[in-house]
Image 1 (tube, rainbow, N blue to C red):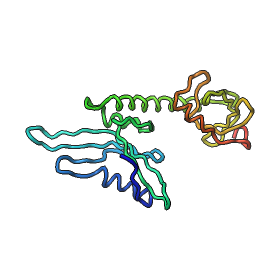
Image 2: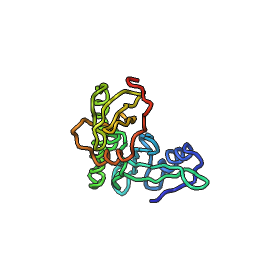
Image 3: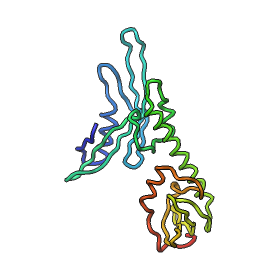
Image 4: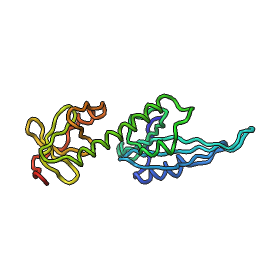
Length: 206
């Protein structure tokens, strides 16, 4: 489906999604949200569909992961969403890792869902490795970002102050750096195409 708009606030949209659109009873099944989490403007949900006994079949249920991408757009602007379930192979991979266990992959799900779940696991693996590298990083150490090698020259709150080969300083997210020599993933390369914030006034050791 496409984008649906018509909510004045983000909270109104979230209430609609969690209390109405994704939680309802029909003549053939009951739908409910087992778990949900917002990562930026991505609402990740574990949905359960429960079917009552019918035609000799016992009561049964199934779970799946559904992403609702939210944004504010239009003139005047209002909030809207687009839902994508895992069988459609979402491009987003920030789904909480525990949701893969809350909604185990079923035999009825296709290759798109399987491939997407592998990408989610890889995303969190890389993120954990980046944070471990950042935790051990010292001034003077080097790390990789995109296709370049960056020298750590300081820290600013939760960010790393790094100096590139041209001598320009930027702020780097701890979750986006890699060890020197490790090939970047396609997603990391894409992320690096948007340069980090410039840090010309960074204080060394801050």
